[in-house]
Length: 299
Image (cartoon, rainbow, N blue to C red; front, side, top):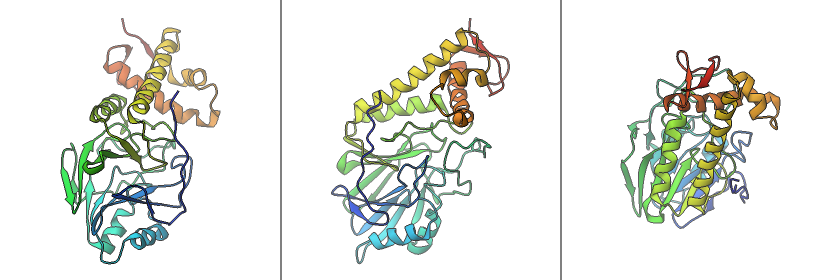
């Protein structure tokens, strides 16, 4: 079982000091993909970084600006990925502050889907400074942030490590309230599992997801996250072994306790596992792996 953490105390539009170097303002955009809303983080004092400015809501822009102390200025706007609950406010915030936008541009694999599995995408997202690949270090007075490449949820997902607190702003890569959606073609299960191990190896003291409260028991949480994915993979393999050839036929079996209206989204998740299993030689199909493919155990 994943040891979810869902208790969070906040008021919309109010800035809370959540650690010595971190302030948080939560946007009023609660929903099935955003939990209680987008948590925008302000890092440092004097010259500050803003992480995941959030949806393009004028009231949230004003709340971020109001959270700045007299004389403070935003020098860096950091975006974990291009989904519409994370990146759209970057442009209005830049217009107000003059700060550069940092992140990884939308990849060629990203595309609109007729099946809603996320809060929507900001396909116009274009950072001023590219952090694709990770490893770049951004600094301000008293704070140091490192870009950590974590593809999987999206191809352009970046987390940000705060050196001074051994903390990671984990975006949607790891969330305390829910598992992460992996939807091909932009989402990639192989990349995601590798990214989980990369974060685990860093031995962070705390994770600050964009949605929900911090995760403080980091290693056990990541291990439970990975175990959940492996368990779902085992279920998919078992279904194929029992003669279920098509994803549309597997989903009612694998997600029997899930509202059937969510089965189309679940099928996208199963496709993510299938693509990974085909790559690893555990499952075979004729042609590229797709929702409509017929699958069999590899011999």
